Length: 448
Image 1 (cartoon, rainbow, N blue to C red):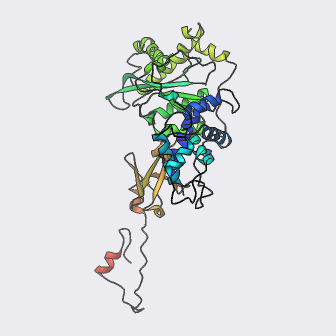
Image 2: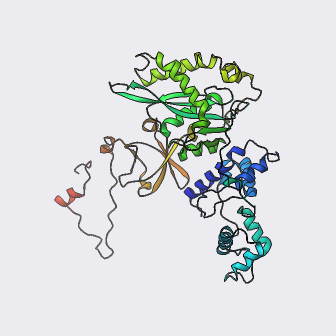
Image 3: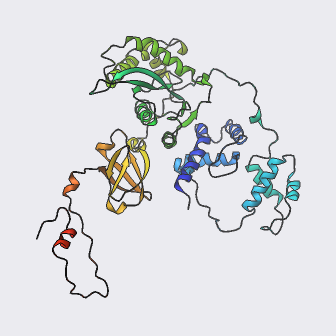
């Protein structure tokens, strides 16, 4: 049985390799060169000591995703488990290690160098070894991936909205927290469409973590559809598994910028410069009196000024004019998709003996049958206290747990454990009375 956590890691790894190829038809001319390029690179494969993936394997993953979505990329138990195969795992690993150490050896020399094995009565067939090395990417001469010369940087621009979104975070002004005089620093989380320079959505938040980023991403999807690619930084909020799962479910290729190379985010940085030059100097005390007031001022500027100002990078057109002129509209969200369900966070907890679990410093009460079990909690951080949390166990939904009400539990009648007589005890054994009886009563039981 495949471990669920390992299966999810494998599915995310597979999706990460094919995500930027989903927009290319299987028969297109540029697809197979891209597959060969990816097959020539080395990767850290979850649960495997191998470092390469064959081009044909990548093509099968593409077909699986187009047929069944992200769930089709989860590994499945082998149908031939427990039966002999052409090569044992030990023999295959030995051949791969030998080829990596001595790449000049031919297939015949590899088989001769391997010698007799205790699991195979005869040596492996040359065709079998060839398929093994071909799938591992060890049959090609040379490697373009080893070229570490100067990088080729070129200006790029996509033609249609939704082909590429960028996202980054900018440090913002301080605001006063609601109901207090404390001021907190803000962070501007923003998305930018590469082809049109339209801002799908942006908002100031009190932090730059995943819990602050995902609600902004959700609003961007509701307003401007689903992008094909999302180009982000290497911060912890962009490297979170939660964001990777959301993008995989939506069919969005999540692309991370190379570390210490900010050149690829030039358009996003240029938009932040516009914010600093045109918006921040005009803020008043009323605009920074609260986070809500600051976001109202931000969005009024984006929709009222920025989207309708001529842009030099768009040949003098405004972002909204460029968006309207596109012949290829962005992908709209599937109306059957439950976006609220998709964006729920997940956490694993063990249910305590008092029927509770702790989540972000708050206790939630679960059913007594789950005591001692490890459950998966799915929740919205912004509404967990009022909405409750969804409890899943063994892949099935169990209940929606509410926040613990300790005062209400004072009036809940406890179930008294059943008294079991010993086998050799007389049936007419005397019942406890007096002080002993008072010790057996619960705190809410009355004298009889």
